Every structure is written in structure tokens, then in C-alpha cells.
Image 1 (spheres, rainbow, N blue to C red):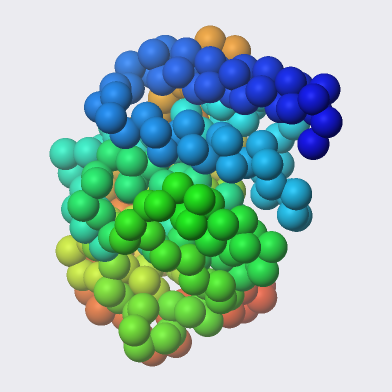
Image 2 (cartoon, rainbow, N blue to C red):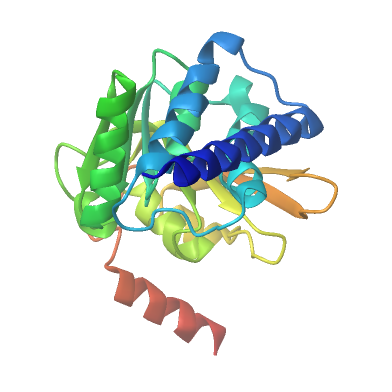
Length: 252
């Protein structure tokens, strides 16, 4: 990297961090300063990454707020979660799964994604940062949810911007242990799955939602929370195409 490139990267990183910390302050979220190093190390690694693109934003403001600060909305639910064994579905760049590890040092966190490049990034970051009890799983989520070592074993499953809420929920429940919680990040226009018939088939109960704002000008978001009440039938989750077809059929 040239000196000019290094200077530009440093400026970009400073803007990401400033946006992140300002957003946390706006959201009323606080966590111990000794855990800030996870944010700092991720930003440093991200700025040196030359592999596939792992963030869908370009501006440092968006990275700091929409990617990083938004991940910490889960702190609003801290008293209601058991994150000892946590899985992030479709993690991509590590977030929001890494927010669980930041907030709960003793949590064991698995970051799942089907894309080789995304997993290379996350493995690289874990090696770079030295984080313990964090692993990367490369697999299609709807297939991995049927693997005996992963099926219905996690106390917390998170998912953000992977697919429609209904699809995310069916996939997530395949990993979720009875008594565990699934948390979906949703935009303001997305429908929160609440049909009792659908949730019963997924072994879930709708607990509620937590609405919040990212900043004065970045809109509202919501966390939808579900509790696992019953073990699943063997065919759940279905593959992505079957879930999508059933949703389309239900809308007719």
C-alpha cells in the first residue's frame, strides 16, 4: 500500500470508528471499554483485506452505523438471552455475531456462511484478532441445520439481512435448542412472522419486538424475538426453494 493509500485508509478507519461510537451514544448503548479492542481490530483488519467484498456499504458512516452499531442493538435484549452457545446465520463479515462475543466474553460463537470468500475473511479476522471461542462454519444454512452436531443445539441464533424474515426464521429454528431464542434484525417495512399456525410448525413462540433508531437520519429498525418451545419434525427446515415457493403460494 502506498503512503497515500495508507493515509486514506487511516482516515476512513477514523471515520468508521467515530460514526460507530456516536451511533452507540445516540442509541443509549454502553459496554465495557475493555471490549472496544474487538471493534478496533475488526476495522484494522477490514481496511487491509484484499479479498472478496464482505460489506455492502461504501461510506464509513454506513459501515460504522448500519453494520457495526446496528449489531449492538442486541444489547437491548441482554436480560432475556442466554448466549452461551450462539450461532449467527449468514454472517458474511462476522456481524452481528461478533456483537454477542463482544458483549458476552464467555459466549461460544459460531459464524455460519455458505460463501468461501466470506469464510476466508472471518477466519482471517479471528486469526488476526486472537479471539477465542469463535469458529467459522462454511455450509448452506438449511443443510447445516440437519447436521446432527448442529441441529437444535444453540441457545441463541441471530440473523440479519440474509433472506425474508419467514425464511430466516425457518432456517434459524433448525439450529435452536428448546428454551433458546432466535433474534431477527428487521427493517421498518418488513413483516414480522407471527402466525400461530406457522410458528407452531417451527416449534416457536413469538416473544415480541424491540424497535429502535440507528441515528436521527438513518431510520428505524426492529429486533423480532422468538422462543423455541418444541422439537422439530425431521423435514424442518426445508430447502430455500421450497420455503420460498410455500410463501408465494400462501400470498395468492
